[in-house]
Image 1 (tube, rainbow, N blue to C red):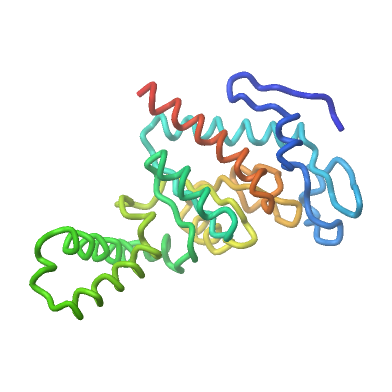
Image 2: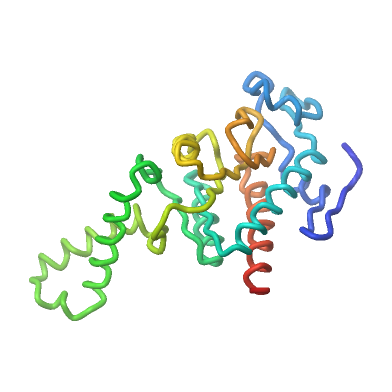
Length: 236
């Protein structure tokens, strides 16, 4: 493996990346041809990502994130895989940024006005429950309203404060959430994404070559994103 590299500004350490499993790609049979530029070698029929190139692309992504956050712009975080959805929610919530960690709703970007109406309706129901207005209803009606709120919370809870299309989107798994990327490209929303060896990196504006299956890998990258955003916000 290549020698250790450290980036002091963003606290990127290639040894830590390797320990987190960032460099472990997919089986060689699943590799996308355009990802070969980021592959160092093979181990047990698994492609190994070049950690130096991964660190460099992570740095570029963090520089972009630093820039747009300093301009008070918004990033939508998308991660719907079962084992990372809580992590995505936690980090986005800590940063006070919107997120989607359940199923992507078709038209979220391309038909945003309709989505926004649903978000507003969700907020109306939430306010109704938090006020004395709910007492006007029967117990059966109250139960029905609570059930509806739970369903709306699942779909729109992470987007509650999203009043306009985001200025960028961070996708944790391009294969699972390819619809997000397609809609973002149609609306010209910059895409930052973790790109495993089975994905075409050309679909992403700021690709981060890395393992998108291991929670340790995704967490390492999201923690770096969190550090940058938190630092910019604290300076502001």
